[in-house]
Amino acid sequence: MSYKIYSFEKLDVYQAARKFKIDIKKMSSLFPKEERFDLISQMNRASASISANLAEGSGRSSNFDQAHFTNISYASGLEIIDHLNTALDLDYIQKDEYEQTRIKLDGILSKLNALDKYQLRNTNTLKKKM
Image (cartoon, rainbow, N blue to C red; front, side, top):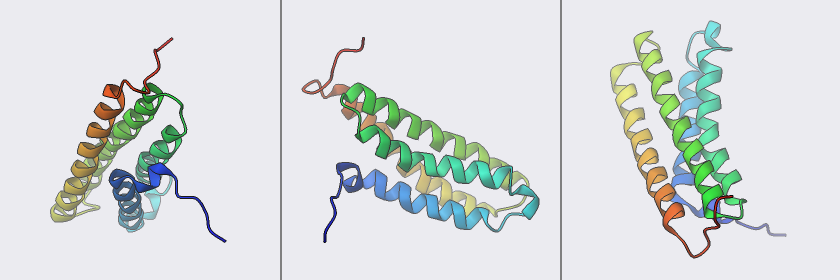
C-alpha cells in the first residue's frame, strides 16, 4: 500500500521547517522544568506553526490564501527569534547554539519570504480578493 505525497511535502522550506521543529524540541527539553508551561511550550508551538501553516495553506484554493498562511509561518519564525533571545538572556542556551539556530532560522525565513512573493505574483491562479 502506498500513500500520496502532497505538494507542500516536497518544498525545501517545509523539509527545513520539519527539521527545525525537532531541533527546537530537543533544545527546549534541556531548559529548566519550571519553563515547561512558559518558554518551552511557546517555542515548541511557534516552531510547529511554521510547517503546520505551510501544510494548511497548501490546501487553500487561491494563491492569496496560500500566501496568507505562508505569512503566518513567517511570523511564527519571527516569534521564535524573541524566544531564542529570552533563552540566551536566561543562560538556557550558549551563544554558539543561539547563533547556529539563528542561522538555520534565517534560511527558513528567507525561503518563506521567497515563497510568499511567488504566491502573490503568480497571477495565473490568483483569485481576486473579495
